[in-house]
Image (cartoon, rainbow, N blue to C red; front, side, top):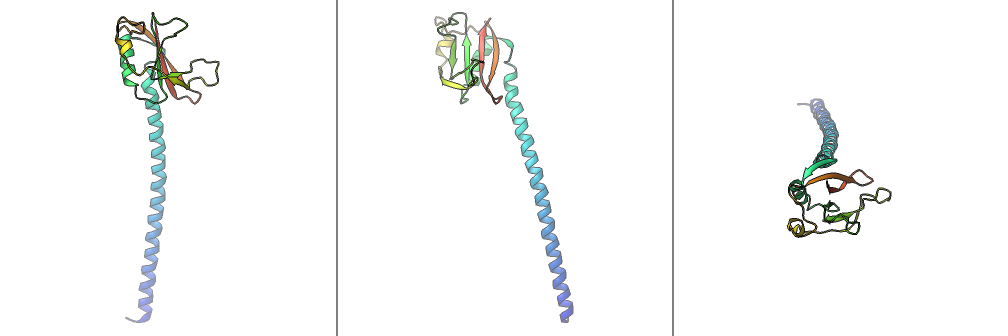
Length: 161
């Protein structure tokens, strides 16, 4: 093999290598773009599903048993509170019981829907029939979902009917 043939083989190999690298970079770029789009779609679906978990509680009448289940279900969330107003604890001085965290429910306040304190972390009083904070499993409660200024769900208020 002479020098001219070797030079042509090296040039062809170099050209193929550059073409292969270009192809891989283009594929990686489009895969990265598709991955970013999929991640955005997944994040959007996750947000919708998270909000959908609370749709069943908004402006809905439910039983005390369902309220107790909601207390158990959402107990581990940070910056989230559930207020339960029963027939016995609705006096202006107590305005119900806040569980887990206290949330600002004054709609005229700019911090509406934000955590303002710590609530009750045990359900003992909700299960004790002699306690004014007792939640009657067959009682009827109207639920209202509280959202902060960003639209994130920060609490639920259950008011006994």
